[in-house]
Length: 303
Image 1: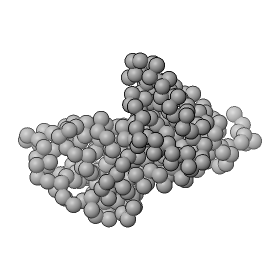
Image 2: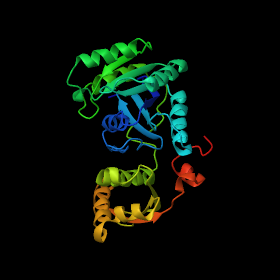
Image 3: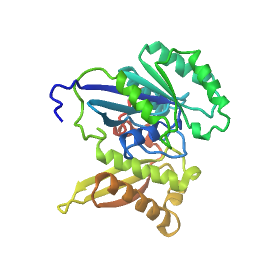
Image 4: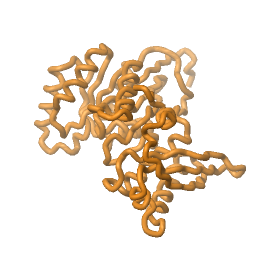
């Protein structure tokens, strides 16, 4: 097919929403592979995750940022600040909202900030498959429609894919004319070493859930390609005290072994190569107060 005279379009889409609204689930679905971690625990997305997908000659660049919420600690404030900074730089704001929940004053504040930006915006009421009373969905639509003149309102299930095709179509129509920012086959601009550390962090939460706080982090000490095409990765799982370290390692190291097996499989699938993953657990009580931790995640230490 000759696309020499075909007009190309490309734009940035900021995924905004409260923690656990389903932003990462949607991003993984539209990209077609896992690049952003998904867990039952809130506030698991800490850094900007860019997902890239093509719709014909239009390139959609999704920016999944930390959830917006009332932050109190410095690290949390830095995450929320990153979310709003990315929204300001985007061509379109896609606001994800958990349709099961009643809007609150905090929701009102988020919608007001989106309105004040004056950018094209879409709201996706997510998790509709978990709302048994469909009249509740109508109530949500009315509530949000009264507060902002959205370009589109969609009812979706990011987990099941319901409504996502139509959402993609609307976003494609809204993208500005311009050259593509990435190669056609690109999926993300995140360094693969950072994606690998995020996948291990996801497995820690999925295996232990409420036993560990979301403040746990994972850092890559080594990410190196071997001559045979496989990749050797050494990662440090950073916790805040010895009790957390004991829980993470488990009896005779079984918990850490299970986490490593699941993470290794996820990483190997993503990079399409054999992965030699070595995990180490370290205690660093004040890791959230260190500038290096912010820089590693692409956050502003002074925010």
